[in-house]
Length: 494
Length: 102
Image 1: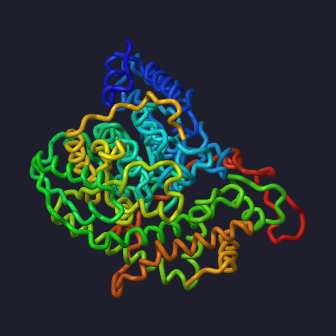
Image 2: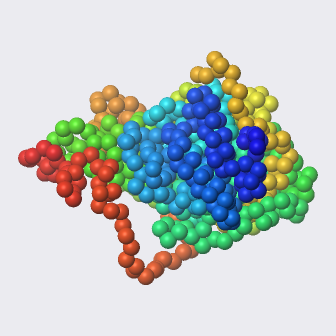
Image 3: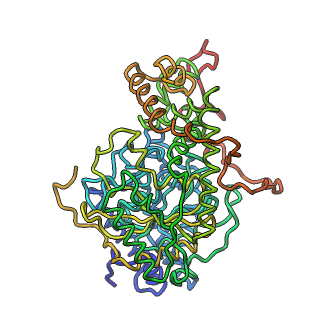
């Protein structure tokens, strides 16, 4: 039968495939047709895996024909940030360093989505090695925001957010080290979740900051994100930080917020640098939750201002260490005619890495050097203790905290050209990665001035991800769903 | 403290990133900007007596499991992304710098 994939949620697609209303192959073909017609404007993908998608779809259809029970996301189109391994595709991290790298194994998070029945549409664009907040640092060109092609989609998981907003896939996976899921979700008007550290396996995801990284889903609805979390969460023996977890994220999703206490922080919502339209939208979101029966409680995160400094100490240090593996020997770019091994490493890295990657590595190398370590790295870990304690104190009073996902809506290409100015745009997202608890960005309408999506960030205690999604679902219910962006005005591109 | 170009050249050597003279100027500016405007705030906090936290999941113990033999990456797969190989090995240029280019 004819169907409009743009208007279907993940759950509706899976139900339609299971009922035989349409086949998984028809869904895959519809998603690939959307990629064909929209990708030229958006550039959300670094690789489209048509063959893998059709193979996976045919396997689902064969299962159904054989009378087997279908998995919960059977036939749902999905794409993966290009820092996640999937056999049969490249894994470039949007870097020349890995331009020709072919994955030799599949990441656990990716495999779990496939096991849940998802159809792999491709690999999505990102800031190079996830260092950035705009996807402008991709070595293969930026992604455009489907809501306004002249704007960035956010980052670093910009391609994953844009692919969902443009309806080229129904759900995607991203990774979030300092806001890289929540901020692009806000910019593109979709839902994006950073689960609690340890909720989802990091095995097979190219490491940036190992104590900060977490994989999470994007979808157009909180329900699609919850469905994806059901597939993703749980222990993986290959990642010893992953925790045994057996929660049904859908079970209480629609139970409402009556009696829930929501923390609000007026000093943060109106902090310097936060645009008026964002502050207003967050206040309206709080009022909506209150009208649904939640109690608003003012809380404080007194050390929030220290988080940016702590993050930009910790993350480059961890990145410096993680990216040491790219030496031109076992994989990755190798320079021509090296003099010796040291020359090969230095020139391969110089040629393979882009400017922002070099900046982060250099900063990490400096911060970990003798004498400097005690000045920055150790204090940053002390600040981490303070921030973690701030959240613990807040969560004794409230079930979740509400704040913006980003201080402003999507910005124009090139608007934040100074790297350190870009870093400050992460002020609302990085504290969460430092403390490790969970957060989700929910679209709460369009900004009064810019007309671009505003994201409200809900933050919950560690391993209360299901309860957080329940509050997010209630909040999203107050807003009309942003339709898929597909009719791109010509001449609007940058 | 301000980093000089000489300092930054030393860090680049240590980080194994060859920088051109032009890149060195830009990188020095960037690092001084980042230290002064983003990182130095950390020094303004009174952290006396605060126990550092090195990981978001603090109260965990070591994970132990039985040592079970399993298949690793097959040799040919492990080698397939390498720039240069020879037989069963990755091929690299001279490590000590004298003799045989790769």
